[in-house]
Length: 151
Image (tube, rainbow, N blue to C red; front, side, top):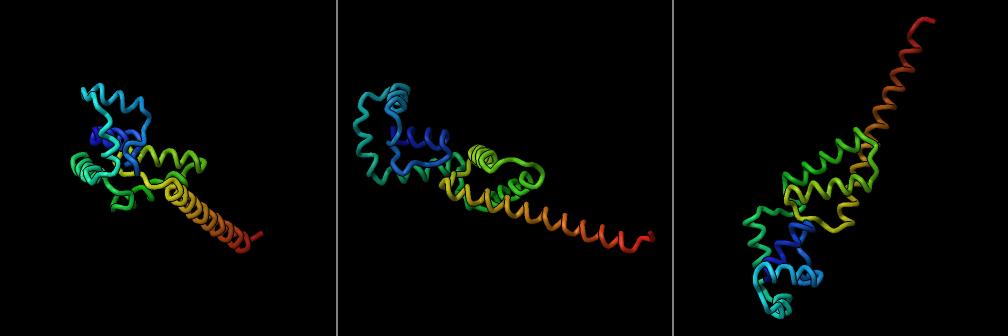
């Protein structure tokens, strides 16, 4: 039951819960019905057992889940965010949501909310600074060209 619960939460939420039994009772009952388990009281023991850590390792291995900072996936996410921030005027919250969906789709375990929010903010700032530099260089070149051209 514990393994099924962890598998469902990582697939749905994109991360393992610190307390794998901290899910709505409706979910527990639904899984118990599917697995034909009548006694769900054993979940209280699962919460503190070492088995839950073995299950997370097994799920990572069998289903290919990777850590957020694993390479080259982290670098690919940063590059993807940079391209989106450079080419569009998407809000930070939209970029955050898109990054979350991308991570879940690619089976990369989600970091804490603040970690991903800081990443999105730093990438947006870097893209804005780059745009500002390009515009400034264009402005300088244009003014320089105007000074050289005969009036």
